[in-house]
Length: 250
Image (spheres, rainbow, N blue to C red):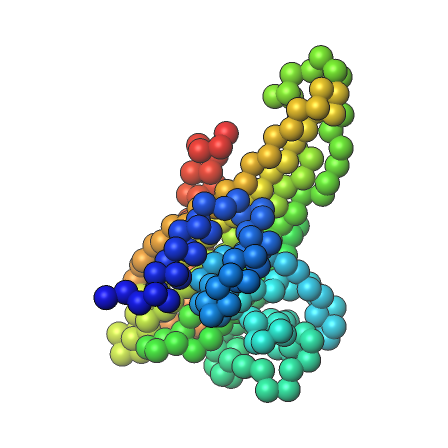
């Protein structure tokens, strides 16, 4: 039988699924005031719009999320250091760190090619029977006014601001004997768009999220094979989800 805590958690999750991603951070904060016992569970279960920090060691931007958080500090994938500094922060093993760096460079190139800007980060950790990782991509459209004549068609308004957040979480079960790995990918995309016609006061505000999963088994030879296998899945999944969002909203 479900406990009161389980019922409260399920009710909170049902509520978050009905909130706009644009306001989920504030809504979640308000919710945690009501159910403080669920702070850790909700923070780890609810995807929030991604934020960016600058690594003081490398000087590069990196994404902060629950997958690189330890207390109030966040680990930079570029330097492996926590911001703010944390002496006893969780660190990946040497082998997993090597794989993380390989994926970091690969997905940084992927982001540059597909998004022409934005920020990407990868975070890896040891997992039973293999490893797990998070690949996160954040892209902002710079805010810009879109004035139109007073009698203009609102459909002609251009986008004034927009944000794309994609979070890919992969669990890999690795068989060193067969040299095969089974990858389970869970992808969440959060999209927010604003457009307005200043001439007639028309406004357009769209925000939504979409989650999909995919599983595949692939052979591997070394760590670069893992990165290639995961990259193929992420590329295909993002293509599917962009098409799905376009059909729903446009």
